[in-house]
Length: 577
Image (cartoon, rainbow, N blue to C red):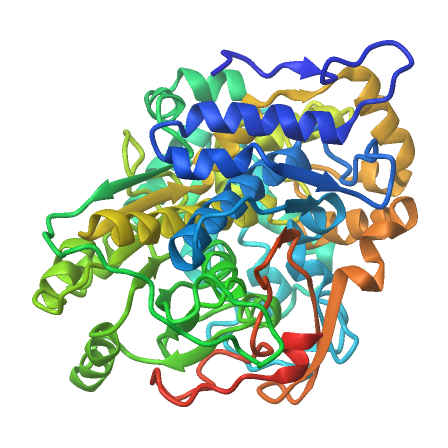
């Protein structure tokens, strides 16, 4: 991996425009080198056949950012599709398959939750809350003041920035800096920011690090890429692949994929039909893993506790294709229900803080013990913020935390002409991480079928950012073009502007500059019985000859379904839409 961010134009110079297609090929080559120990020759042979499609000339940079986000994710989707093709060879016989990755749909995948709608309303519509199940139990999202407890602020030292993060319970973080958990008198956006930043500025970043660790909250000093790489943790991640897969202690025999008929008489087969997935995740990155597996035909049950918060709107997109069930793993009844589901599960997805499921007795080693004797192994995939090795392994965190600590936020701010960090638009590292976790699960299932045993996959938000930054930033000429393409209003943003403000301005600019992203052909619409409204979500960027890639059912809110594998509905309009 390179030692610094490269400003590259993918072998283009002078008046020749930058090609996202060439950039995607280069990103795929880089990724192939990074994961050479994680993917087999059966996968790599399909990777050679991947082609890219676009509605444009392939020179469009969609996001107002200096990062090769589309290229990085095209590379990940290329590997993902190649693993799927290798599984198809196992299930249906070896053959050369045409694989296509669409650039526009790859880009929409990276801001799925911002482009999804319910009853025609997107995430930022003022009336959308009336259509959602209220899972914001502690009002960390609904109350602006509390929501801004998860934000980037300047510290006591001028030019030094710290991202506090109240997570889904804002009170701890607000109390930490000397503020009340609730301030009904504070309702205006700038006023909330100014009050919170004034209190953050009482402390240095070093002091905030200590205070944060004491209460075990997410929070981090905003570093530049060069500084992150010098940290012990940065050095560890630079020497790791974007995801890892290791064999757990289990001598189960090879487990062939089950024989399952297509969803409808006229539909093509799906490679994960008959595969059962228990998704223990919230927010975006973890649910994106399960959403991807559902897109390839897996039965995915999103398991959530009725006592834990989740962001209501994220469920509109993130729960597509799944069943959702409330199970309290801290009660005897809940544990019995979960362990009954576990008896025939093939995959566990863990998106909680490191150690959380272990403390409940459901870490990977205990899961293997619980399923021993059933004759088939299991694939257990975990994703978190900092990764599972290194000095900061185990620290809590979210997308903004990863983007601040690795240098993504500083690079975004400098691209905008500022001498301060700005968290980039959209939770793109969440979706990239979800893609990497899904790949780990797919490879685990492939290896279980060929070699037997149980497998543990790990990945993290920081590992995605390390991969992204390792590709280099766009060259100066490309960055200047991107700045000219987008609205001036976007570039008025500053470090303390919220992710909603940044995302909202980016979305408005992209709708004007790149209407091709918002073409209805990139979307699918259907009535959701769970929400009682029409839902719209983005289609998969992946197309594989002879296989169907797509969902079997519309989204629904958390806790909508009974916790069972039996009698799942197949919605023909979703399958054929």
